[in-house]
Structure formats: structure tokens, C-alpha cells
Length: 119
Image (cartoon, rainbow, N blue to C red; front, side, top):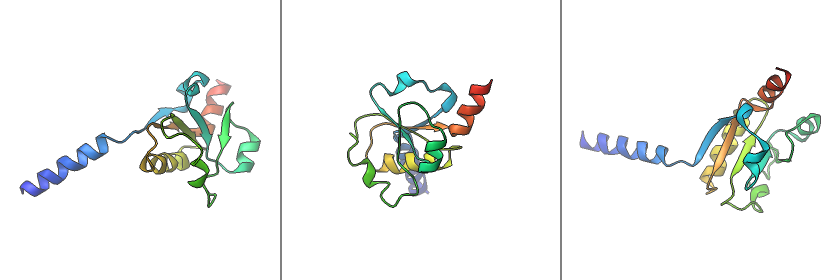
């Protein structure tokens, strides 16, 4: 029984220490990326059809997705977004596991950004 409590405690500590977090894309501003980088993980065609200012396109489906981050300083904040938030959540998890110090998933994705822009 003590083992189960220990295991539960360890799981809570590990999950609590994760550096990736979320932020609604509608709350994001260009000032947020002053010291970081904004990454659009959609396909190149989706990126061409429209993207956030100053975003860099690194396609989640590209076989070299992880390698594309080799030149990005792991101590800089990385903001990731996609169409609706699924791909960027996965990308944030991968980047966090690779040792990036602060990864922020812009929840809601580009669709939420466009919907908010119309309001």
C-alpha cells in the first residue's frame, strides 16, 4: 500500500514539474515572443494560407520535425500553435521532453485566432 502512495506522489511531482503549459491563442500578443520564438506546426500549405506575424513554419508531419529544432536555443521560450490545438499540444509535449525550458501551447489554434479577429 505504501508503494502505491509513493508511486502516486512521484507521478504528481513529475507532472507538476513539466515546463510546457498552455495559453489561449486569443490572449497571445506579439510582445510575448520578444525573447522567444513562435512556431506554426501546420503544413506549409496551411501556413501559406495565413499565419500569425513572425511565425516560423515547422511542419509537425515532417519526418525531420525534431531535427528542425536543433538550431533553436533550448533556454528560449517556444510558443507553438496549429489549426485547432491538437498538433501543437503534441509538439509541445515532444519539445518539453527534449529539454526546452519553456514551451507554451497556444490553445484553440489559428481557427480561434481568426474567430476572435472577426469579433
